[in-house]
Image (cartoon, rainbow, N blue to C red; front, side, top):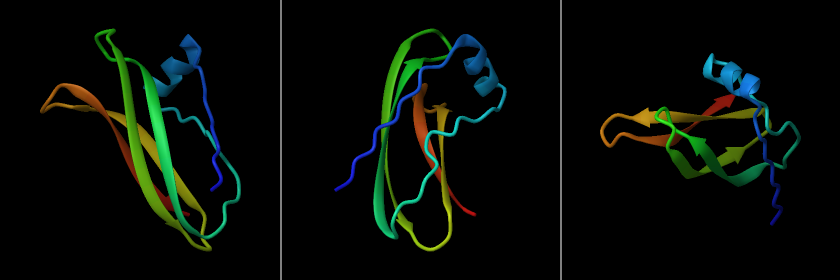
Length: 91
């Protein structure tokens, strides 16, 4: 099993850009066709300055077409906690 690890520490300016709708490309490369599992861990602060740590796992199929996975921290209004949502785009 291949494991790849990526991390990124944002400056204040970069964080502001992300809050305004900017994106951060974490990986651009070629992976073989088949089933893959993504595990992502987000560590940061919520809107009220509280420390948060959230993780998500996502399984996807890679075929011939390019795949883009969008990871979004989203406020969950039912329990007032941030959750990570994964959306898959086929290009």
